[in-house]
Image 1: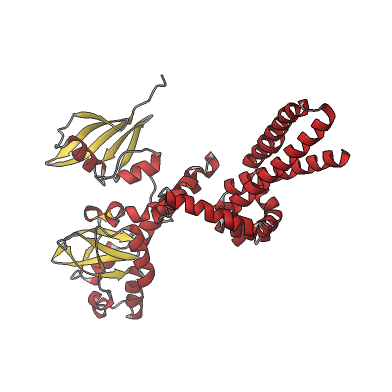
Image 2: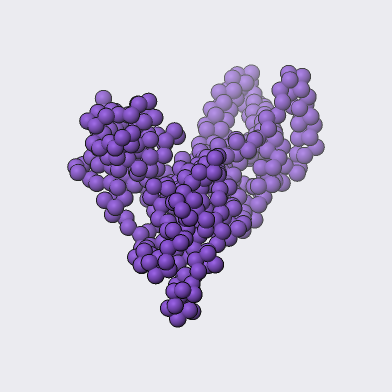
Length: 422
């Protein structure tokens, strides 16, 4: 009898082990395990990864072990209690084993494994791997039966697509909680958004483009760029839209120094590089790859008709990922950016300020799918050209047109409306 009771206890422990292992290994984060394997060089993580590769075998092994343990433990307990109480022992065994199996071999181990899935998976992996190998002939036969049943009922194994994998990554990022991790979360989300954002969305518009005439005398040219914060200057001929080259300020200064200050010996056409034109529907991911391949930092954006739209730089793309990058030549003052705060949650904004800049600067969520600038947003949302003084409410913001020049909205007052909880 003592041996039987000891065997029952051992079987219940085995059942609890298999039950908890199943929950831990199916609930463990594959991203965590991969990180531990690749970066932490954890041999147990490598073992868990191998078990993940054949999840069907893993699940069948744990279920087989759990059910065998429960069945044997129940049979032994029934035999023991019949010997003590006679036929009434069957009822006693049923009640006692149901309680023990439910609480101690199912609820407790699974509850613990759910809360500590990653660490538990690493802990139990070596022993589970032994059982997987031990039960492999039985598991193989059971797997064949399962597959045959699937075929009979026309159930096909789902294929994991690239979209599914990307969705899983996005979900993991959104679960990356905590105020102190907000910046990292935004950066990760921005990286995934690169294929969906075009250079037109982040470029410096032609209206704000600093470019100079290639036929301008070199002395006057140098005066123009004396306080210029840019390292590359687009050069045009006859009209600003006709970009014919790009000159590096450093290259120009070096040429002037080498000529001993004799400006007549300096020819801009010889120092410039050919402009690199790209279509405005190029995605940021494509452009970043092209910047790397060409070892360029600067491109001219044109539309489908070859008309100049603006310029995009490597810094513009990087800022989409990490946020604004301000060096000693950059100006982060809101007034210079075309934004002026006049009260709490109220700003006067130039019409050409990009929506993405506002959203990123203030954590707003103004829709930017159909428009780039705040003026374009109002034109799109109203399906008209609003007059001065008109007010609109969209996306939880009130917009008031303050200045308009012909068909251009030059200045808009934006007030973020407070939402009261019901």
